[in-house]
Length: 302
Image (tube, rainbow, N blue to C red; front, side, top):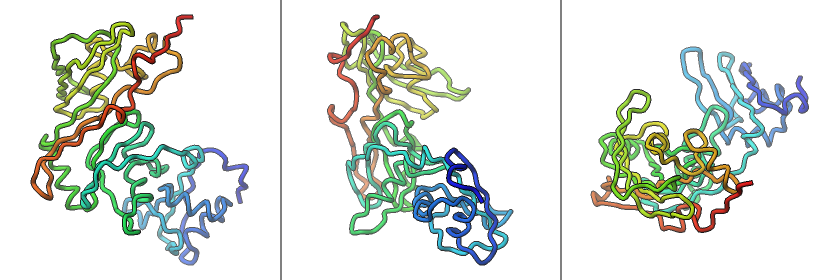
C-alpha cells in the first residue's frame, strides 16, 4: 500500500475491479488519498472507466458504483493540475440551447485525460446551473489556452451538430484583435502561407499605430482554423504578436518590464442563430479585450 508521501508527484494508477468494491474503495486502497479528495478529483475528470478490452475508456465521475471483474479504473493523478485554480469565464449570452462565453487566458477549451475542470465546458457544467440544473455542454470550436475571447458552447447534441455544421461550412465569421511588434502598413494584407501542409488564409488590417512603442493594433479575420494560424501568419510576415512565446520575438518581449501574456483576443463572432434563424453578432467592448495599453508599456533596456 502506498503512502501519501509516495504519490505527491504525477502518477497513473490502473486498478482492476473485483465485482464487490466500489470505485471509491478501490482507489482509496490503492492510493490512500482521502476519499473526499478522490471524489473531487473524479469530478475534475481524472478518473476513467474501461468496461472491457473492446471498449474505449470513458470519463467516470461517480465513484459509488461497484466495478466488475472485467472492468478497469484508470486514475490520472497530477496534483499540480488537480489543484490548479483558474479565472472564471464571463457569460455573454444564454440562448438556452447554446451560450456564448468570454474565455479568459489560461482556461482550456477542452480537457485531457489528466483532468478537465480547467476547461471551459466543464467549468460551465459545474458552476453555471440556472434553476439548479446542470447544463451539459458540447464543444463546437476551440481557442488556444493562451488566447482569451468569445466561445460558443452547445447544450444538446442536436445543437452541437448544428453549430459544428456552421463552423465546418464557414458560416461563422470570427475576428480577432492583436497587438503586434512593428508598424503594420495601412494597406490590408492577406496571408495564405500553408500551415502543416494545409491551406490557411488570414486577412489582417491595421486598427492603430503606436509609434513611440513600435507596436500596432491589428484586426485579423480567418477563413480557416489551423493550429496557431494567426500567431504563425503574423510572425511569417514580420509582425509577431507581443507576448508570443512560440513564434514571437523574445528579444523585444524581454525589453518589457514583466513578460506580457499573449496579446491576442477573439473579439467577435457572427452567425445565423439555428433557433430563430436571425443574424447574431457578439462583439467584445475594448475593456473586455484583455490587451495591454501601449501607453502603459514600460521598457527596460538595462
